Figure 1 (tube, rainbow, N blue to C red):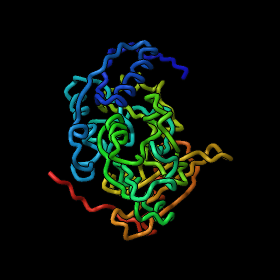
Figure 2: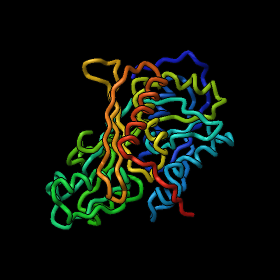
Figure 3: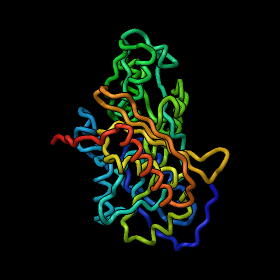
Figure 4: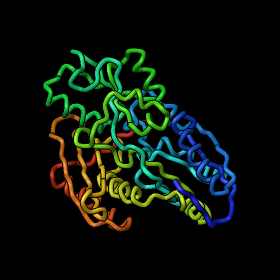
Length: 324
């Protein structure tokens, strides 16, 4: 990445979760900002999403549990920016906050990690597969049904990336599904036995992309972060996140949304989306559309059309059921 900046040098504090992956992401942004001449330090924090590991996110408040404490630090002035994995960021930010930067995307695909088999089809009889995602659960169940593998159980898997790998190595699961981006960023690509192409397992909105959040009144930070912006990625994830927002924006909804630029026409964005019934009573609904996209408004318009098509095909937003 070639970086240059014409903005004044700033002293910037980055609020970050303290997991190894979150710290890698924050250190990555820190290094880039320092190359631009800014002075940067990290403020490590533990969020509720990191603390509550015995229940699924869909039952305890959703993805916002990973960002709320970081936003409080921004609001109180203890930090200036927060670095997030975009797939963990709620679709609508609280009033007074803004997404100031989306960086170039790492591999957005899902990864199969297993010490016993290289693919889904090789799972032993009665195997247990772990995932923390309702999206992955629905897509895995669809693939297993196609293989006639009603014997395989899909069980919840919570914790940071290292915790999930430890649970796999302890034998609690025969295989787990993780984001390829996190494994690659931490130098753990050798753990990957298979990477699912989008046609096999459609990624989550924003998967593999980093977003940087600021208070919306910090125009100085928006200017300082501008050299880190990767517009082709931002357009892609804006389309994806609009689908999720229009469908309810909840992690209790098994929804996939993945956009990519047309190989024959780099100005046309293709957006694929899939919705599944968590109870398994309906087939997975899939929609794919293309549009000319040259700005965020056009990307969001494409996302809205795809969400409308999902609903027309039978996809239903979730009923809110948040436990205290």
